[in-house]
Amino acid sequence: MDGHIPRLTLIFILLALSGFILLISNITSLEDLNQLTSTFYKIQSSIHSSFKSPEILWPLEVNHTYCAHFGQEPTAEEAKEQRDLLSSTAWPGPLVQGLPVELSSDPAKSYFVIQGPAEQYIGGQLVVHVHVQNFLGLPKKHGGDFLIARLHSPELGAGVAGKVHDHHDGNYTVLFPLLWTGVAWVEITMVHPSEAVVVLKRLQEEQPDRVFFKSRFRSGAISETTVCNLCLPLNEKPLCNYTDPETGEPWYCYKPKKLGCSTRIDHSKGGYEKNLITKYEAQFFRSGVNIKVPIPASAMDHVTVLPAENGQAKVKSIYNAAGYYFHDTWRPLNGAVIWRFNDSSAITHCLKGKIVYMHGDSTVRQWFEYLTALVPNLKQLNLYSPKNSGPFMAVDSRNNILVRYRCHGPPIRFSSVLSSELHYVANELDRIQGGPHTVVLVSVWSHFSTFPIEVYVRRLRHIRRAVMRLLDREPATLVVIRTANLQQLNSESSLFNSDWFSLQRDVVLRAMFRGLRVQLLDAWEMTLAHHLPHDIHPPRAIIRNMMDMILSRICPVGKI
Ligand SMILES: *[C@@H]1O[C@H](CO)[C@@H](O)[C@H](O)[C@H]1NC(C)=O
Ligand SMILES: *[C@@H]1O[C@H](CO)[C@@H](O)[C@H](O)[C@H]1NC(C)=O
Ligand SMILES: *[C@@H]1O[C@H](CO)[C@@H](O)[C@H](O)[C@H]1NC(C)=O
Ligand SMILES: *[C@@H]1O[C@H](CO)[C@@H](O)[C@H](O)[C@H]1NC(C)=O
Ligand SMILES: *[C@@H]1O[C@H](CO)[C@@H](O)[C@H](O)[C@H]1NC(C)=O
Image (cartoon, rainbow, N blue to C red; front, top):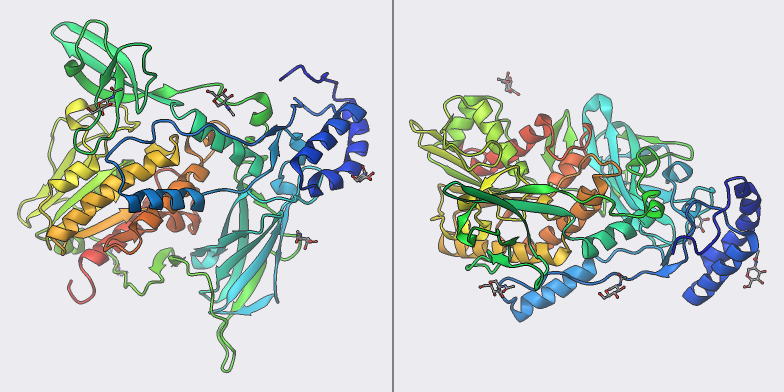
């Protein structure tokens, strides 16, 4: 499509802008796609738009879905659930693509307005309106920008996540519960403009193999390496089919030239594809411009929260946060009491007689590392496992404590996992006895970010079935499932690991485990509410709060 419209120099921008601005109100208020398109063509020909990389408008459509129909056949109920999940993760956005970047959402030109007085009462709810505008400073007329929000008091070590509601018209409402007294500051961040989310959606459906994997094969002196993935093109080159016989989860590698498929010895991340997006699309992913950039306040950016007065009608917050930080300590709002396990003897006392299984990605491995670092009696055995990927095992034989970590099955982007250790979480759970001495901690999210959502739904469905079987045979087993967390993003990592991908998976995970006897550990809110920068591996201060929650659940009040 490039070259269709003559590229003019930047000198024409000013000329073009004046004409353009007159027409903006028309463009943005038109509902009808055809009318919009023809209007845009008229603009383009009449003012010879000289915006960078002008492209012809094209309707939003992506090609569906690659490799999503494997695994055990969903029951009718599960198939309906999948349809509901897909519709619940539907994301609004622009009607068309290809508009000049100047019309895309600009966090710096957007603003928020705190509603109500500068002094509000604890127990109430703070309402903030966000007005998203484009680079020309004009209001956006559609939704789909990915915003996150936090209310915090730095000197109190206090913070809580806000709930963002998209009105689909360029305006957003953010709700915060008022949970402590003092001066509290509002922080609204645009993670991505809606125009960037469109690109992420396209990548998710059309480039699910943008992270690629490889395996080594070895027999005697011969060794070969080939590329692997969840799906590989059929009928091109011979494939090795490593589909899991129990769950039906697919996995393929190109067959080595000399060796057979049974000579596979390991699995590792191959790399990240380059040149995934056009120059035009890249304009929506600029660090410091439109990736995780704060939206300023139009005026007041903080409120003073006062203690509840007698007779003051309490406005109940309609949004229930999972918890909040106070003195840098997480306080869940579900009534659970959190004990501080800040020394090794308290942890040992709590874990006495327990077997703790940790299954999943590196974010659950962080808990293994935390415990073995903090509790000297918990001795990690040398299993000769590759660094970082495990499996790992730590034992305190005097107190009969066993802690194990094992990574989830492919897709997993670790540097090297032995083929013999590529196990699926669902199959592992089926092999656990369970019972009051057993704790199962699961975290499966990050390595699915590049695949269509159906692939994740299918994986969780297998894990959920195994969890239900486990709880069915041993109801006293404690199962904790960790949600996704926010991470640091730049123009490149956004295409693979964006928080938008994580949020979509987070929504699915919460929905799929709702109502089951498993504990959800809300890593999303715990990283959003905290003052430390977002990191795929949350810093120790957050890990400590997570472990305190888990240990408090293992050893509830009065039992320690
Ligand atoms: C806006 O659209 C209306 C109807 O389509 C048209 O009459 C009017 O001239 C347009 N305004 C501008 C500034 O182009
Ligand atoms: C979808 O796939 C078809 C056939 O593979 C292709 O012709 C079409 O251009 C694709 N559409 C998009 C939006 O990529
Ligand atoms: C969005 O908010 C602005 C500022 O309050 C207001 O003028 C505008 O009417 C709102 N837009 C819609 C579609 O409600
Ligand atoms: C791979 O094996 C599975 C299970 O045996 C089978 O269902 C699937 O069709 C095979 N894939 C291909 C491409 O032959
Ligand atoms: C653990 O916490 C208690 C109370 O919060 C404190 O008194 C104690 O010094 C802490 N111990 C360590 C080892 O940090």
